[in-house]
Amino acid sequence: MRVDPAQVEEVARELYIRALKMLPPDIKEGFARLAARETDATAKQVLGTMITNIRVAEATENLLCQDTGIPIYNVTIGSGVEVDGVELKRAIRRGCERATREHPLRSSIVHPITRKNEQTSCGPGVPAIHLDFSEDRERLVIEMVPKGSGSENNSWLKMAIPAEGVNAIKTFVVDCVLDAGGRTCPPTIVGVGIGGTSDLCVALAKKAATRALGTACADPEGAALEASLAEAVNMLGVGPQGLGGDSTAFAVHVEIAATHITMNPVAVNMQCHSARRASAAFTPAGVEYGF
Amino acid sequence: MTHHVLTAPISEGQVRALRVNDTVTLEGALFGVRDANLIALFDRGRKTRFDLRGHAAIHTAPNVRKVAVSPAHPTGYAPLCIGTTTSARMERFTQPLVEGLGVRLIIGKGGLGAGSLEVFQRAGGAYLAIIGGTAALETTWVESIEDVDLDDLHPESIWKFRVRGFGPLLVAMDSHGASLYEAVDREARARREKTLFRLGVK
Image (cartoon, rainbow over all chains, first blue to last red; front, side):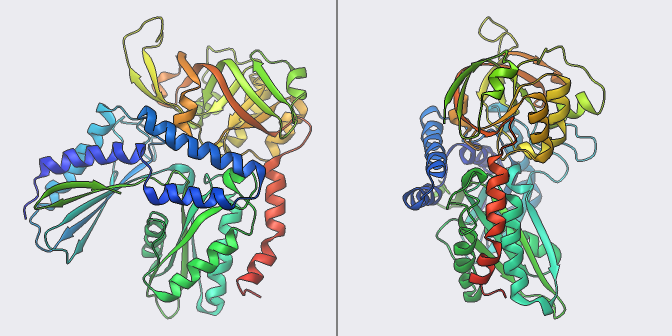
């Protein structure tokens, strides 16, 4: 199967706009679950406003949140797909620029030193484009995540040591949730990376934070930690928007990688309640949009 | 818990009447400020032609569309999506905004810190919480973009919005030293040991 860069550009453009306007069904269900069990009066109202906003965004075809985020494109290429990788990356960048200009969207991207905004949502190294490969031969998937800054500004890495054990990981996650307070726009998905190198650990935390609700860590030890940490962080009472309540996190997601005998790294990255993502699958039958 | 409807200019007496857990609906003018324009004003000595005395300032940068200048769109910008950003980054600008430029109300999400709370007590100010991430709803409360200043910083310009029925907003920090964020944080930290114990951390 060949993939045409011109079509990739169109899809990259469309995905940015779709992600900003339509919340995935798993996140909507997550809201319903939290609202049903919330006991705090203020928190119930806050969750109610968030649910109303999802409806208003759909009815008015508006963006869910004004923060257009840092654009991230995760590309998974099947083993039978023929595509020019250089052209693919260029096409994604052009699609991202076009979405910004043609919708139009607020460009939230600046040069990190001069702080100059090119009004394109792009700059050196942005959009972030991550490439991976799969055994699903006739399939290329592009996932788009506009990562909001309120949650992204609350990211942590701790190079714990083996002697501190798994307790260091648990304590770190609880302390990150406490330190984040209302700044991450809770309820959040708390993404936890465990193991790997420092950079891999942070990447795992991002992968965990942007994973669909209802999915579990493939590693059974990781999955067990997800359940116990989710229960724990929701005991803290931070609540939606940090105004108190039971609904601090939709879930805690864990991703793991093996690590060195001397290392015990843990990273936390959070996804806000506007947990936006959109995807498109290229197959021989055409392009199919989803989440 | 009282509901207040406020239109700028807002007096010190009106702000001092606000207590945490009260709610506010704002009418009329609302100014948008954030990182780049506050750095420009307070670190780089730039000036704004806007008179902010007695006004409300919201931590924001909107999505706008360029349109022809008309009575409905005097700046040539139509509002597309207007929402609120994390206030904590603007913590050190509360003092010059309130005590220097005379702002009475700061609207934001996620709360401000102890320094801002002191300024609100001293000068007569308050922080109103909007629900972050609900910009589609917030946009329906904005009638128009009336004016814009320092637009070379776009989208981090200083925006003057005309709003109708902007709220209800929750009084989360008042001029009497009360902060809902501080209270929630203290309570959450008090639960830390019990939470870690539940996780088997001794």
